[in-house]
Length: 251
Image (tube, rainbow, N blue to C red; front, side, top):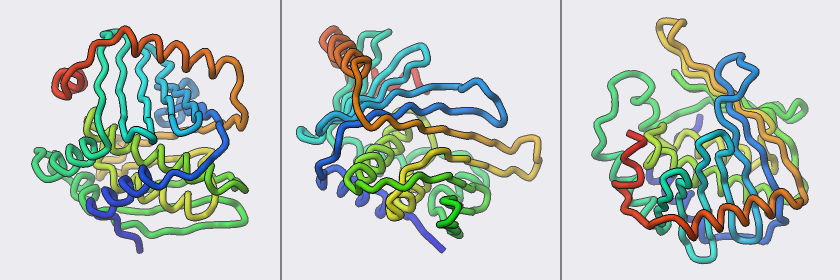
């Protein structure tokens, strides 16, 4: 049985930022689907270049997150509004800890579970399928072994920070359940090919099923360079704003 407390999640995220190993540049295309839908709700293109990560929502309206491990800064960019928000890693962790202890979360089994998630973990190494079963949240992931552990670590580290940012800026779930999944995937020397997330409800018609697919390209190409150039250009045009001004439209 696994338990992921907030303090563990925060420490894991902090350690994942300061302990950066050399990894080859690569690109990941991620698509998110609801239920059995064939058309994704959102598509991301994520480029890992050196000690920077450019995570771009390619589904309109375009948005981007730039993680700079050298400077210890994370920049959120909204090209449509021409605004940007730059946070230090400490800012992110402080916001996450504050919202966890002060936010008015909905009552119900899901949020009770997310405050202190406990999973039963099952890993089928032959089939490369990982399952984290909780009540009411379950993750099931199809995994791909990667011989380069720094690359595995780089992707897991990015996923940890994405979970933190989605929580503080997008009103998403508390991050520790997803961080526990990331840790389990990383510890097996793998990256996810597909992740299925199920939230069960007493009324089955209200249960939620989400699926993400992850396609990897282990060498950057010209379109990746063009994407980075366009994001850097948009950064130059964007006005720096406060946290409250940047996240207000999300709530």
